[in-house]
Image 1 (cartoon, helix red, strand yellow):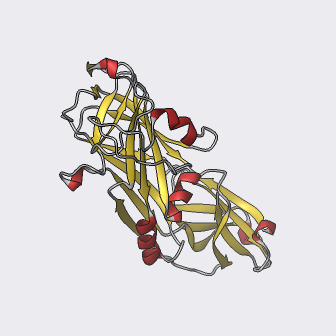
Image 2 (cartoon, rainbow, N blue to C red; image 1 turned 90 degrees about the vertical axis):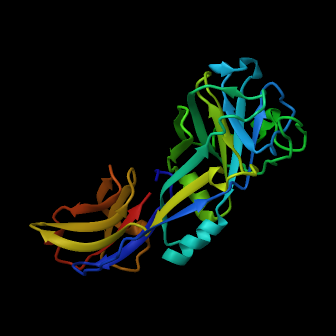
Length: 308
């Protein structure tokens, strides 16, 4: 959750009324990817979207053939079925994403001299433009009918795209990548459409090949986007504490900024409610909001919990 996310009213409750809301969570695995392809700096006009593998490489891998140059990967998952599943569990649009992990499985012996190898770090970005074409090119028979290295600038936009994290490839069979959750990325997943990613080497020593969606072998090694969703944050109770009121809240997300607003009129537009407390969470889960001197207010008050 970031400051750019529009405010959303999550719950409105009158003073001292207890409302219990059960927390719940669900996990959905998006697999295989909807489309994926790798591109090569040394073959900038050729497509490699149908070879059963994707690759991320720097310019100086520690083994293999370093003259093969840099490789980048484009990947996209369609989250329509995921959104439908979460809507059926929590109610339409009544859920928040609490985690997203991309699982990538290495192909340790891709059987083609075009690939580099070596350990190192790579970055995953969410990209706003997912209209690129996968293509049918293979390492043995590249084509020109899909995304190429020369077209990267067409689909990448540093002003909109979001960094989702830097990850280490250490030679392990599976590399789980726990993605950050910027607002644009989360909104894209919740919308239930194409969610695009771009992967590029941070270290020049990196050279890794992962199985792609078109690999015809074990389906367990195909790329996965594993998403956890939960009921939205909510107020579960209000407890007097001397001159203050303590609001017990559920389902907070680490890094989220939460606000309690108050009004004496329930149907007043949310923009006209007055702020009373702010809490930035260091950990996900249940949390409290303390309203200083609120117990001493003699008029009937209503409270809403909002988040950016």
